[in-house]
Amino acid sequence: MSPYKIDENVYNSLLELLNDAYFVDSKGNFTDFQFYHDDHWLSDSAVIDNLIYKRGEWNIELVFALHTNPLKFIKRQIMSYSCLKKATLSASLMRRMAAKDQRGTLEVKVEDFKICCN
Amino acid sequence: MYNTKERIVNASIKLFNDHGIASVRLQQIADEIGISVGNLAYHFKNKEAIINSVYEKLFEDFQQILGAYLKTPSLLDFDSQVSYYFDFFKNYQFYITDLFATEHPLPEVRQRWQEFMNKMIFQIRKRLDFHARRGDLTPQTEATYDILSEAIWMTIVFWIPQQQMRSKPITETRFKNAVWNNVKPYLTEKGTNEFSSMILPVFI
Image (tube, rainbow over all chains, first blue to last red):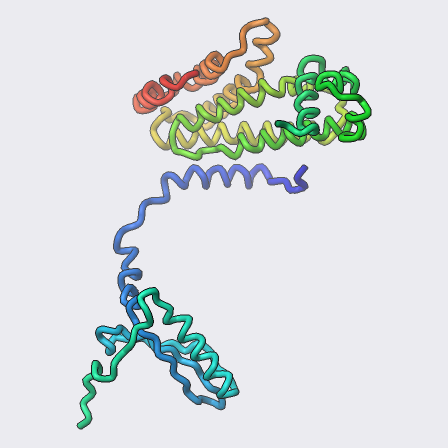
């Protein structure tokens, strides 16, 4: 037999919460899923790893760039290592993990940036 | 195929119902399932161990029924819980002697019964609140619903023993009728419609 017992008042309030569930809870709006649509482009992004030496440590950054429009990108700092070799290895592993795509790894071409050299 | 332990427990429940817990002997249980007392002793060292197992199963079943609270927001949900209660109280008819026994082989059982019965009343009471809020039941004072929940509880718990005492048939339809008759006077038009469209057609 279970040694745990529940107080009568607590039990009553639990039942009340169950009752409330059918009145208080309501269906969500489509706008609540906006964040999902906003981030949808990330599934079509190429991943670029980047190492930056900062405050005596090698920081690994991953850049997620949309392969059709590389100017749309986000940059995330993942972690840092004091050893460059470790950081390089870890960065390449992270990039491979993040870039895993059934359609093959997407690539960003430099020409797409249309950089003005003036 | 049940294993021997389960067969022993099930046979014990049947014998407890027929003769009462105190008057059942190990020999009777062994005879019931066609094994020797020695074999019985291999599975359960004494009668107390069997009683323990029976109660473990009983309270587990009770817990399952209490867990079926408001799975769907309809009167049908209560109806199905009433069906479970019918099966439960019919299966464990010796409960009635338990409730009034001054002494029990397992002292903690009395307290467990009390605990479960209280939970049962609380659930019925809160269910009335829920349906009143949903518009299935007419708004009444707290006291009225307190009394109604106790009346429903009494019907669920004591309907089977009273039928037995009067040598009347124990059927699920009559049981459910008895329970729903407590609620019917408080049903609103919406509640009555739901009752006749959803519950009456599935009345067994």
